Image 1 (cartoon, rainbow, N blue to C red):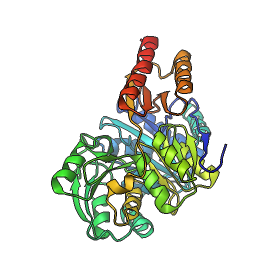
Image 2 (cartoon, rainbow, N blue to C red):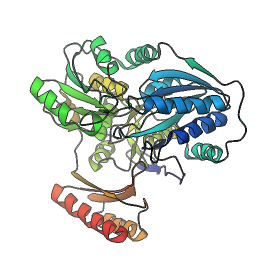
Image 3 (spheres, rainbow, N blue to C red):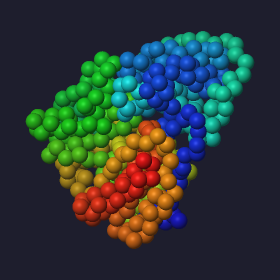
Image 4 (cartoon, helix red, strand yellow):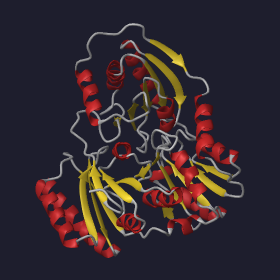
Length: 435
């Protein structure tokens, strides 16, 4: 039910052949081939009415070839491919025309790539819409007419102007370390902070096609933590390869995750409701309950957070992994705008002081590689029984990944020892059942 401090659950990914939690992705040359990407371009363009498709990509070595194949599919369907070059995913969402398409595998390693799609309003597609595109991929139909290729000039400048104007504040005197993950924000994000007056140390800011997300970025904060500690920075900001995730490190080198960032922003922005996923820390829920803020809980995936926000007329949401969504003057999650909002929310405090408002329950996670991404029914039954016993003082969660061939197990408790015990218990049951 809804109400002050209450929870409401939304989401659930239906089974689709090609699309996962966030677009289509896989290892290039294996599960993701150039032919498949061309088919995606054709089907998505046909589905959207054979109009104009803005195409962006991240910095992976496979990007130019896959961009070329995507464009071939768009043109073959009778659409106009509008090339934006290397662009953060949120920029493609903001600038989307009849359709937006990003050649990216987000936070995955360099050998992966994929395609993310946005509709004409910059919204991620629903499960039903993705299923419609899949049907066209299996049965493409006749070729279209009038296909063409254009180039969009000034895309990065237009995006930066929008983000700085809507989300920027005076950052004079703030010393920030910025980890660009050798991805799409390289060059862009450090310049944004500098234009607002911050003193910036940029790292992982030299993409070579093979170093995106490698030992850096939102999936590996070790380099950022070292940089903050050695350089005496006020905070550190890390993006993932395509820029839709952002995590932070406080002035002491401690990680500030997406739950904590959303909590800080919820209080600073004065919202009365938020949307988060089932992964959100129990400490987040306790803080929101104390402050009378309604929490809408969704399945894992920022698009389910987005769907819940729009359904409920809310503005703020996010994921522990660093997807932070603020729909005031934006259409999707944006790492740079989230980082700027976080800096603005400090209001003279250190990041550690701001983040301390949220109690953090220890969480222990284990990822189990499997051949079938299906959780056995008796594992789900055992998890439900354990959660009933815990009665809100902890929990276990077991689910298939939407992007990798793994089963994810999470346990949360008031002590790390208890969380480890719970996680190990469920993980061992998964191993026993799935071999």
